[in-house]
Length: 225
Image (cartoon, rainbow, N blue to C red; front, side):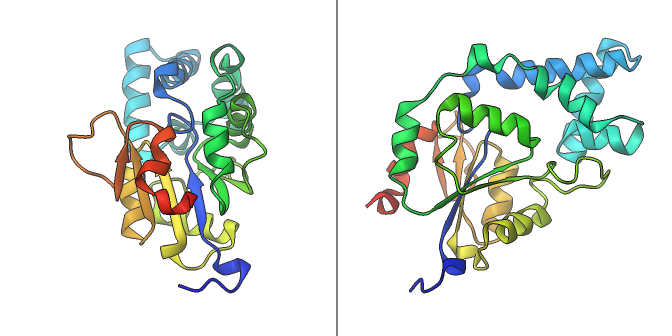
């Protein structure tokens, strides 16, 4: 395909959490703990809070969406008490290997995350890769106060990402993500999707499977040539 305009340029979308950095850092576990603590401060018992967090995540993609639908919460305060309180400075360090890989990828690169903007920005800053991206699509950035904001794996979220990044042809879109549902949704739209997973022998999601973001160039070597 001949690319003859900026709008027709390929875009590589990168998920943030447990994708740009390893899940072994334990950020997800800390995040879940912070959410449960928030629920407990709302007056719930711990067991109820754990069950509700898991249910809201399953039903709505994010615990916050369930909170906004069924409870009266301040989403900005929620973010401060959950993602904003994570001790990322003690956990996350610069990743020169990731930085070199991103620098060698000569196309538009965007962060595509369900997280709120400040959290995603903290992550890329701490990883030392904040200057490697052309933009950031945070589903909750502009719409955090709207109960029905869209997020991955909803198809509307991917369409919004394409609009934000200025690409109209789905075949020019790439996504790397640790969520099977997210990569499956991307693939259904015609995006090239890569699943970061510990189980390469298990069910296949997306077009490619890798165990770490550092292996991205191994499954798509032509993009680095």
